[in-house]
Length: 140
Image (cartoon, rainbow, N blue to C red; front, side, top):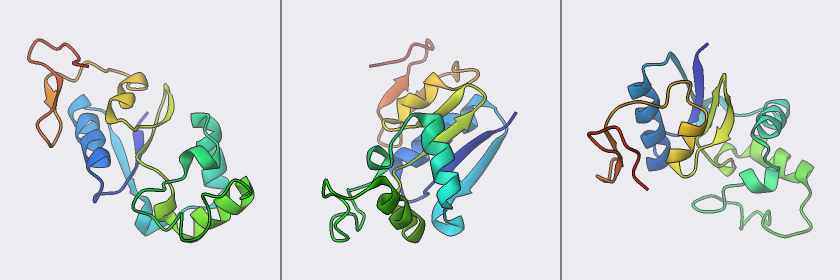
């Protein structure tokens, strides 16, 4: 089975997760959701599989969530989903789907919970932060 990542190449966290997935050697399906967009049904399925509510998956930072009034308590899940379909940037990322589950991988190390083979060897994030040292030990 391949791994799917809903990816934004402009996002450092998403790039780090994609690099970890590539290093794992698994077959990848990279979906640049800002180009493809979302459907309401797709989001409902992903959120259910990841045990997330639309509010938990809402990206507030560097998105129009606040200016659209979506951070207010009275906004319903259905309203959030409709806004996410209209504005794909509102969905937090990256979301990764493997045979072991679906996760919103923030922080990026959450991907290890669902990697079929989490022993990917030494790995450092773009900013130089060591995630897995030369001995194969996860840091942090």
